[in-house]
Image (cartoon, rainbow, N blue to C red; front, side, top):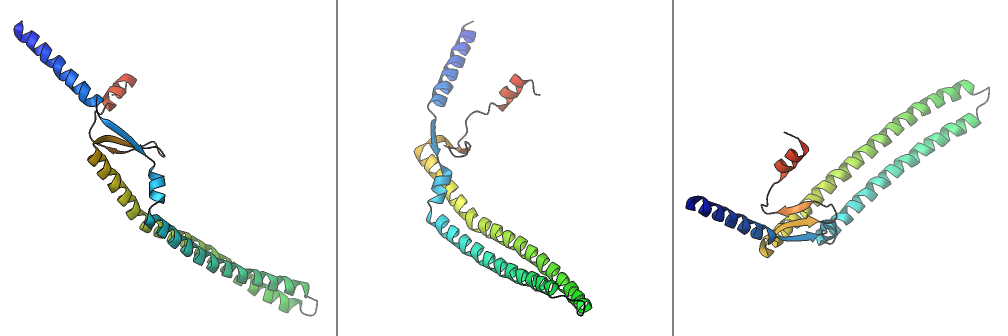
Length: 177
């Protein structure tokens, strides 16, 4: 009976100690997007991406201008068409139509490639910044003794040091096996 009583007291003591330890865990929050956007690297990357986008846009606009010239050429030919030059005009219009379609396809291809290049460059420039910010968050959390750091922008935990996983309890409560 004494052993049972000692065991019960020990169990209650351990439970109380665990509860006190869990109650003392520090929880912090940040706005990761705000921090990310205030880094010097982000500002540099944004400027680089803007320049790249503008360069690609100018290239595409130049191609669209050529496309519009081709369209105007076809319209002018149709307006100046007469019975005397009908056969010759139709041949020229057919050639211009084919050139126009090829140019239009080329513009679409260049637009697609430009979008892919900008997206690739964005990933290339932003990934190291994200890593740097996450490393800083982890470092501060460890230095200050935080168990959890939540990002108020996304609502996600960006850092956690242990804690109790209650997934199994929730599944049981929901009848999930």
